[in-house]
Length: 379
Image (cartoon, rainbow, N blue to C red; front, side, top):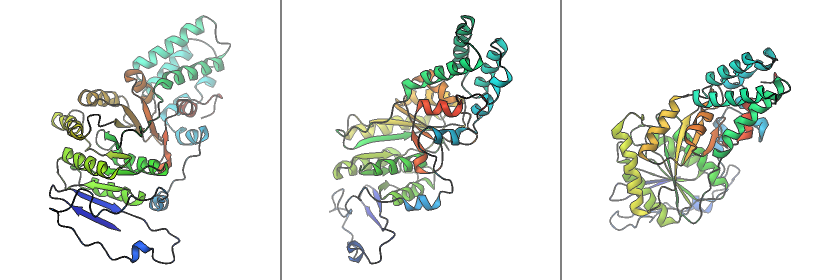
């Protein structure tokens, strides 16, 4: 059921509710006649909107549409999804081919790290550390060196493996998503909505990607699946205006979390990059601390270009968290280490599959274990 309330400012709030699949008789709500429209000039911001949906709404549409099984919980799930990465392939068999502790083995390790997009700076630092320890005879064999490399990689990621904490004192907690075209921002928002809904939080989504024709419809579809309100305006509308209207609506309804989408933009597009700063300024007119989290979505297949993306976006609006998507499949994965060393920005989530539950809270040990298994020869 969808109800749309239009205001004089052009605000549209789309509301979607799913019926329980086993229901044999109409619910009391379904039996009631539709609420007649209210004149825009007389309606307060949240007038005519139905009550917030209950947390137990089940995302049946996603479960039916997704063709892939969710990854198992814990380290096994990470291994099964990331074992095909370029990082894992580069190291598979490397130590068995080079069982001796010598410079040739270290050169192979450095080449594998560079090939996997770890970056020159991080790769050089890792290998030089191993070289010093090898000369100091800290390693009994190649396996001991492998364990040391694993530990160094984990140590590089542990400082940035910081889960996103929703501050309940900030109501609504405003989460602004940013990133270049095609990284999966809108899909990530849908998955986050499912996660927070399962935690019992009330949500609202803002369809701020007003440049892409299908973006609003895509976000509305996620709203329908999860029983979440979506605030939207027409295509090419001012993104800052959408965010402002959404925050107004969320405040008036006491919503716990507001997730705002933004249009994908290349980090080289000055005008569009400036718009991000405008969105933040407009949000602060209603809440001086908003947005409380600026979550940048990075495509894991991007490689070293992700470094430039984060640097440019961070110049316009302070990035407080990262989501690295598409790590399953052909992603090299090493860019995560490069991002950690270059910026130290918390990595909140990692996408290791298509289903909502495959958007995982980033786990440094599980990630390294999947890319570089402890046992030699295991991919």
